[in-house]
Every structure is written in structure tokens, then in C-alpha cells.
Amino acid sequence: MSETNELRIAVIGAGPAGVYSSDIFLRQLGKLGEELGLGTKARIDLFEKLPVPFGLVRYGVAPDHPSIKFIASALEKTLDNPDIHLYCDVEFGKDVTLDELLERYDAVLFATGAVEDKPLGLPGADLDGVYGAAKFVEWYDGYPTGAREWPLDAEEVAVIGGGNVAMDVARELMRNADDLKAKTDIPDNVYEGIKANKAKTLHLFIRRGVAQAKFSVQELREMEKLPGVQLIINEDDFDLDDDTIEEAGKDKLTRQMVEELFAIREMAEDMEDDGDTDFEGNPADRKYYIHFNSAPVEVLGEDGKVKAIRVEKTTTSADGKMTRTGEFEEYPVQAVYHAIGYKPATAPGIAYDERRAHLANANGDGRITTEASGEGAQVRERLYATGWAKRGPVGLIGSTKSDALLIVTNMLEDLSKAAEGGRVAADRDPESIDRLLASRGVKPIDFAGWKKVDAYERAEGAKEGREHKKVIDPEQMRALAHA
Image (cartoon, rainbow, N blue to C red; front, side, top):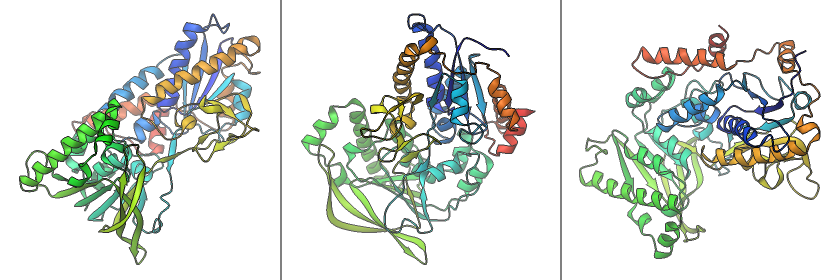
């Protein structure tokens, strides 16, 4: 038995939240460990249910986001740390239980992200042709257990949502397949699907006003550069009162977003004046309508299929309060995509806060509790949550860094108060987890295995003059990793 005296931490989820937390834990331990009586050495085992790491970066963001490549390479550098051990293709709750982890690790951190859509909750939401954004994103990002084909036969489509995921979905539905293939790592099935896409008209419905949208400036700039697409806006949506302009000006990111939206308004006017062109002045064969202050109230159907969407005009005050006007309009569409938020994953044996949609934790400090709220909620020792698992499906990838620092600070504080300098796991043999998984026939994919998958994807991409081409079949990933 090779017992060691280093701290032992298990992290569930190898997406940005899990990887950032692992990195920050080791850095903070290096800085503060001695004064906290913890020493400066730790071994972090990172468990991921998918055969490959990076979660949201690889499978939750549109393939044409240029910044994603940089984030992925930064995460990869972190995983190359000898104190971090990657266990992909190991599912928490199925391949290993909470009790088995607590026996072997001094603390367990959940960074499990989100894969489900919040339900739409409108009449007609169950019609054929209504889709949650998460499943569509899984398709175009090649998620290992996602759909391999997607019905793109609707000529008129609606997208509901005022955030970045809605923008991603709308952009991919308006995309030119050859343009997308040249610039991204999409697999062949997605290229073929988008090439056959019949969508000619898209309506994006945002319930609140121009100043209350939740788009990033980057998303808006990507929307502006769609070949063959004419952007169309409603002038009245941009008639903002002084209070709204003043309120928007208080926050730098909101101000920048509103300025970019006004630039889009001018662009849309130019496109119309030039005879319905795209951003480069070429004839547009697709139309992308952006509707603010528009709340969908019902999906209308015929023979069980989507035929239209009914939308109520709203007004939004400077403080973001939305009021319904009782004015309705119907738009003919044959498909409706809703991007109104994700529902972060539950974890077996951990209480879930249904109202806020995250793992139950004390006042958002990341310490897991016995129940969601109320006087009976007790902190469960040695269990923590970070990222969307902690706070619900809000914030960009960058917000997970500040989250991780808060949680790591709390973990170190708790470990320093625990007996024997935080070393409380009974089984301190680092190979114990490997023996347990092997006894169950579980074959984890480690960092070296991931590098083999990555090398293959790069080689396949190079054959077509691309940087990368995604492998989507989990069995192929396993074969490559274990070769």
C-alpha cells in the first residue's frame, strides 16, 4: 500500500468549473497551506462522466465562437499538472458512490454543470416542432449521447430567449454550412444537416426591451457577420426613454451591449436601403427578425405540428419590470426553439434546490446542505459545489473563476479546522480508487488518453485544411483513448 500524506480532493465534473477549481485549489494551497497547517501538497482526482473533458466549452457553446479555442487550451494546460489526475468515462452515482469517495478523499467538490432545458410552459409546448435549445446544442456540438440527425425542414422558425444561448441557436439556424465548416470543428453529420437546412426566415423573440437583453457584445458582433442574412428590426423597439438610457449607462457591459444593438439598428436600415442585402452588401436569401418587448404566449398547431406562434407585445420600464399590453400578433412558423435557461444537473445523494435550480448549499457559499432551505438545513461536512451546480444557470464561463476562488477559500478554511490538518479520509492510498473502478470493470480515460483523441481530431481536421474535426461516437473515443 502506497499511503501518502498529501491532501486528497475529488472533483465531480471536468468542465470549466471543475478544472478552474482544481487549479485554484492547488495555487491557494501553495500560498496559504503552511500558515493554515495544511502543508502545500494535494492530489486532485477529477471525475467526468463523458469520455472527454471540458464540458460546456466543448459541448455547450456554439462551434463558431473564436474565444472557445483559447479557453480550451488554457484548461488543457491545467490538466497537464501532475497533481491533477483525470478520470473521464466515470459516472458519479453509478460507477462510484458518495460514500466510496468520502472514504478516500478529504473533500468532494461538485462542478456538474447543466444538460437539461427549463420547460417552456406555454400552451402548445408539446407540439411536434418545439425544441429545447439544450438538445439542439448537443446535436450541433456532437455531444456523445446526443442526436445524430436533426429535422431542419421548417422554412420559418422562431427562437425564444434573450440570452447568449438563444443567440447561438438563432445564428446556427441562419448559418451557411460551408462557412461554418471552414471556420470550426463541426463533424460531418452537422455539416450535412446545416447544408440541408430549409430555414429562410427566423424570428427571435425577446420578452423585455433593448436595454434589458442579456446578450454579450461578442454574440452581437457574430450576429452581424452572417453571410447571406438580412437583419430586420422594429424601429419602435429602439425608442428608449431618458430613464432607461440613464439606467443602462450605469453598468459598463449593459451600456456596451445597448451601443452595439444601436449599431445593429443602423446596419439593418442600411441592409434594407441597399435592397435587402447581407452585411457585405450581397443579396440576402435569409431574413433574421429581432423582436424586443415580445412575449410568446402560445404555440399554435395543426395535426399535432407547429404552424404559428402567438406573441403579446410588452413594455419594459427603466428598472426592467415587464408589463403585458394585451396586443397580440401571430407569426407563421413550423418550428420553435426555446432558450429560456438550463436546469443544472442533480447529483445522487445531494439535496437539490428546485426553486433556484442548483445543488442545495448554504447561502451560496458552496457548502452543501442537507436540504434546500429552512431551519432544518444543516451543512454537510466535506461536501462542496461550484459553478452552475452552486449558483444555478447564470453567468458566463469567466464567472466560474471568481466562484472557484470563493469555494476554495471556504474549503481550505474548513480543512484547516478539521483534525490532523484536514486529512480525514480513512483510506489514503492513491491507488485505492483505481482498484475499486477496475473491480467494477470501469476503464477511466486519463489525460494521456484524451491527448490521443485530440491528436486524432487534429489529424482528421488537417486532411480538410481545418484545425480540428470532432469525433462524436463515444465508442470511437474509447478505442482511441485506450489504444
